[in-house]
Image 1 (cartoon, one colour):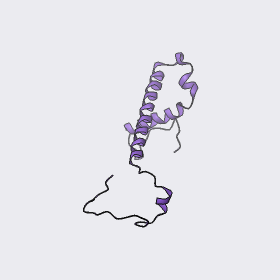
Image 2 (cartoon, rainbow, N blue to C red):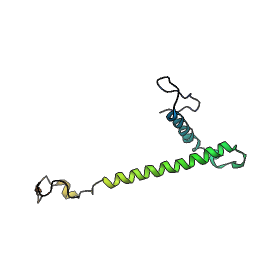
Image 3 (cartoon, one colour):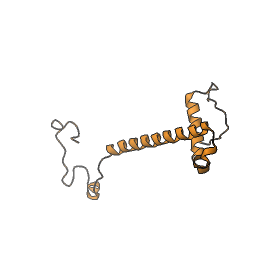
Length: 111
């Protein structure tokens, strides 16, 4: 996706832009903005208060977003099964000591 800083906020249907389009624009500006260290960290005293507020707010939301992604990633990892050993991968289904469980006694996976 190509982002142009000065492209207008327009919905694809030609209607007025909504909250989603405004948030998307602010996030896209922040992505470009945070790559320029001089804008974020240099000359702190010479900025307008609205720019300082933007930097502080977006830094906070950036941290929240990274935390949410990490939590989601950790939840996904919890669903992954344990890796099989090389011998277990090579063994065919129900061969080499494998056996089928009784479906009345174990109607679902015991794990």
